[in-house]
Every structure is written in C-alpha cells, then in structure tokens.
Length: 84
Image (cartoon, rainbow, N blue to C red; front, side, top):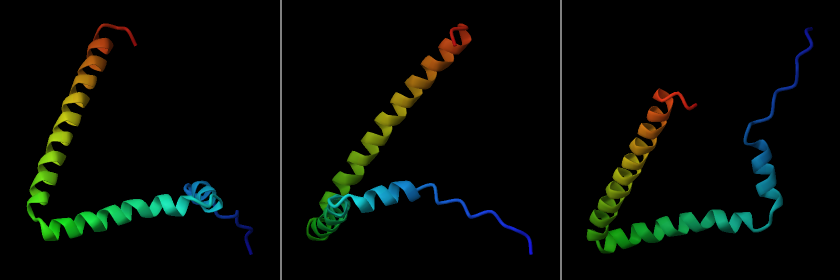
C-alpha cells in the first residue's frame, strides 16, 4: 500500500491550542454571548432599540466606506505619480 503523508493541522489549530491553555479565555469568549442575549431581551422589551441599532450600524458602515474610498484614492494617486 502507498505511504501517505500525515494530514496537515488546521490553520487555526495553534490558536485554539493557545486558547485552551489559557484559563481565562473561556470567560472572555462568553462575554459577547451574554451581551447578545441581553441585547435580544432588550429589543423584545423595547423594540425601538432595534431601529437605533440599525441606524447606528448603517452610519458606521457608511463612514467606514468613505474612509476606505479616501484611502484607495490616495493609493491610486501615489501609484499614478510613480511613488510606489
């Protein structure tokens, strides 16, 4: 039978191993879950919070896009001027 090479490890394997070795990492990974559950309960109680969250998300995404366009324009301008 043909000899096969061992399967390569998952790219996230080292990261996961490091997280398992640290005792406090489980606590820090549960915080976003608790926040999302609390936010879900708050939205059920006060549905207008959802409108505010969507509005804030759209504003942040719009600002991020404007910053990205500005960055890309600067890169294009530098590339056309020959300063790489």
